Amino acid sequence: MSEPIIRLEDVSRVYDTGKVLVPALVDVDLTIDPGEFVAIIGPSGSGKTTMMNILGCLDRPTGGRYILDGTPVEELDDDGLAAVRNRSIGFVFQSYNLLPRTSALENVATPLAYQGVGRRERLARAQAVLEALGLGDRLHHQPTELSGGQQQRVGIARALVTEPALLLADEPTGNLDSRAGAEVIELFRRLHASGRTIVLITHDPDVAAAAERQVHIRDGRIAA
Amino acid sequence: MKLGDLVRLALSRLGTGKLRTALTMLGVIIGVASVVALVSVGQGATAGINSRLQGLGTNLLSIIPGSTTTGVTRGALGSVTTLTIEDATALATLPDVAGVAPELASQRLVVAGDQNETTTVIGTSPAYPLVFAYSMWQGSFLTQASVDHALRVAVLGNATASNLGVGPSSIGSTIDISGLPFEVVGIMQPKGGIGFQNPDDEVLIPVTTARDLFVGTDSVRTIGVSVASAKQMDAATAEITALLDQRHGIGAGGTPDFTIQNQAQLLSTVGSISTLLTVLLAGIASISLVVGGIGIMNIMLVSVRERTREIGIRKAIGARGRDVLLQFLFEALMLSVAGGMIGIVLGVAASAVIAVIAGWAFTFNPLTVIVSVVFSLIVGVVFGVWPASQAARLDPVVALRYE
Ligand SMILES: Nc1ncnc2c1ncn2[C@@H]1O[C@H](COP(=O)(O)OP(=O)(O)OP(=O)(O)O)[C@@H](O)[C@H]1O
Ligand SMILES: [Mg+2]
Image 1 (cartoon, rainbow over the protein chains, first blue to last red):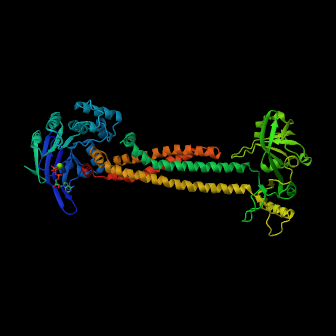
Image 2 (image 1 turned 30 degrees about the horizontal axis):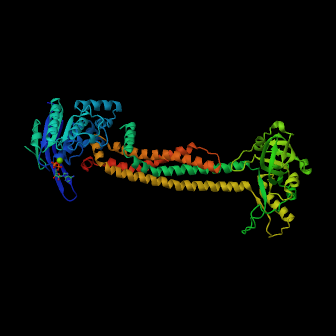
Image 3 (image 1 turned 90 degrees about the horizontal axis):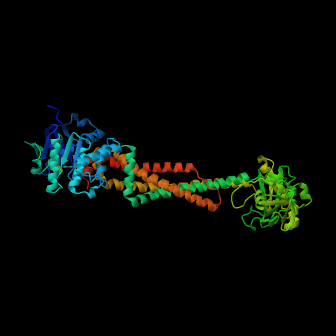
């Protein structure tokens, strides 16, 4: 059995608002193996986004250990976390979060720029990913010139361009109509079939059903 | 991120808000343009003064009629007629004086062949080249004999000679001054110089000839005195004062009717004042550079705020704090350096125009350009680094949530 890609051991995250302490995650244990397609599902306020921020190395746990792809995250400094986000993780956001006034091609190429990849090579790689996702004729469109579904596919292309070990999606269908949403879910399914590790966060059981494993979260705890 | 990527990013960003970019740069443009123009004007003025200093005779004292020693103006300087040719002759005997050249000047029509020109005709003594630092190009200068006998001989300034088509072969030929024939005995070397009066456009004749034929009086416009050495300037001044006081019957405590000017001293004082003024004005102008920098800082702070979400996205996809810092710093640098470049162009253009108007040679000093570019770089860094570090320090989770 290979090393798990994600191992959370007793992870907790307590927000300190100055007045009160809000425990958003409490003693979470979770293991995800390479190639798994996992949905984290729970009601609003249950701690899904908190979980995603920690899994994505945007935030640090206040307790416990997080080992990502063999690396204990607490040992990394801010630049180390940035490098992990850059190379090991691909984010897909609910609101797409494309760079404004920037073409689809440049958007997808940007993570490679932060790796120091030369311009010619990164544009070629970005174009290849966009073409694979059926956006070959939208390379030079700006986000405002794309439909929601197209924007989300550009966002997925940007997450994939660095060949990350882990694809993290927070409510990726939340802003889409049911058809565009279904297309995105279908895309995740195909990516999973080609061997990618995907963690999808949602409150929608229909979306979660697409994954091969569901992890239920309630009040910051994993429910069996 | 690589340097080229940072530059491209900053340029594309500045291109998206052209009016805002232009307005932000305006402060730096005005600051740099005024510094460049003022420094250039200052240098032009100083260069002008220096070339006049060089054109002055060695250890020259100029004596002019009228008094400046009292606070009360008693007629404009030079409007009184108290200095005479005899005064000049007497001054030549003083121990510390090396040469004395009176000037008895009037504007005359000079004709040579079919060429003619109206120029200054000056009656003077053989000491004129020594006193006013001229040297001969062709022929020889006026002799003492020509003064003693009031001969009709003339020496031409270089510019006058070429204006009249008088060359080396014309030594010994005849020209007409106000219709009277004069023999050309010499042509002087060009002295060059700046300002409105060309020192090479003049005709020199014996002082006695000028008195007899053109002016009709003894009174001279100036008497130039060349002192034997720089150390003897004070002694010479005292001797001249004593001699002229005695000749003009001015007792102790009386008001002299002449003024002795040390032109070199005067000019170097004017020169240092002009340098001081230049520094002062450039200092004031650089305040506007600072104001321009504050404008950049203001816009950058607004920009960081507006683009908080973009910063969050960039951090999520792998930008380190340093990448974000450099991105915003480069934008500030582009603003300040581009503003600086435009400012240099405007400043150089302005100083060229001023040079033409003021009549001095326009000099382009590359050092000014280098200094201005360095200064705008510094302004960009100083006023860009704080907004940029604000951006770099943003927490990605908070920034992503920002609406
Ligand atoms: N920055 C914060 N400071 C204080 N409390 C916070 C902060 N962020 C989240 N919380 C709290 O932590 C808990 C979990 O929040 P989280 O955003 O993870 O929920 P969620 O499952 O993503 O909800 P939703 O489905 O509505 O997005 C909530 O009770 C929330 O109020
Ligand atoms: Mg959430």
